[in-house]
Amino acid sequence: MLFVTESKFINISHPRKLLSLIQDYELKFRPDSPITQKAMESLGQDRYHFRRKNKFELHYDFEIQKIPYTEKDLQRAYLNYLRELIMDYQNLFDGRKRIKADFQRRQREEDELRGQYFHILKLSKWPEPVKTKRFISSFEILNLDQKLQLIEDERNKEQKINDCFAKQAIKQELDRRLKIQEISQREEKLLATRKETFDNLKKKAASENKKVYEKLQIHQQKVREQIENDFQNSKSIQEKMEAKQFSIQQQRTKMISEIASRNRKLEDKINHFKDDFGNRLMEDLTRKQQA
Image 1 (spheres, helix red, strand yellow):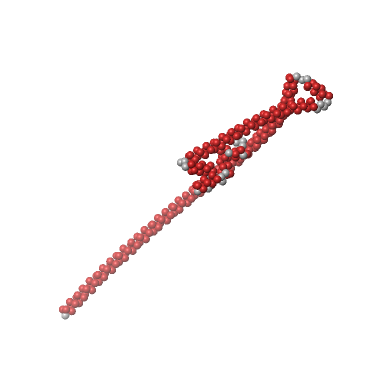
Image 2 (spheres, one colour; image 1 turned 30 degrees about the vertical axis):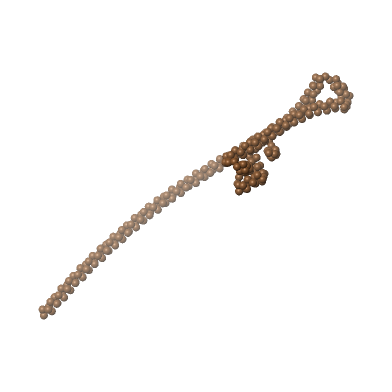
């Protein structure tokens, strides 16, 4: 709990930020505690498998006490632990603020009383000129109202001095705000310049894209026309080839029919020759038999 008093945890008003700092602190600077090491050994893991060291300790405590638990119970216990840390921190912060305010109030009262005492002591022990002596003699016979008036005058002088310091602080604050305003105006001008440059580049890119798109359309039109012409040419070539093949087929059919007719004529002649030759043989044979 003492680590909350470190310098990096002081002057933090937001609990969420404190929560993240506590988590980072426990993970980075307290992972080697004995309970953490035992918990990691019992789990068979190392600290890089988990985000928070307290999960190991709570896990280990649950296992020692033999209490059934879930991840939700573990998370709830851890959040309660962090709430206690935040409450301790807030109490510590409030106590420090209260002690500081009390100390400043007492310091002002002591300074005020010390200033009055030294002023009276100086007037009573170190008389310098005749005027001072007269003042002292007159001071000794002052009544209570006059003494209060004198104290009020001293307070007014101190107030004037404080006002001078306040004016100086106000002047510094105004200078700081003026500087911040100048920086803001400079950043706004720079942002406007960047925006204008970006718009110009955007317009230029749009015009270039338009030109490229037009060129692409023209090129696509030319390609389509070329493809159409090639298609027409290929179609005419195909028609010519089909006509040529048809003529070749007709010539082939004609030649086949001519060859077939010649073969038929030749067969007729051969058959006719065979018939004549057979008739002649028969006639010769008949004559020889008759003779």
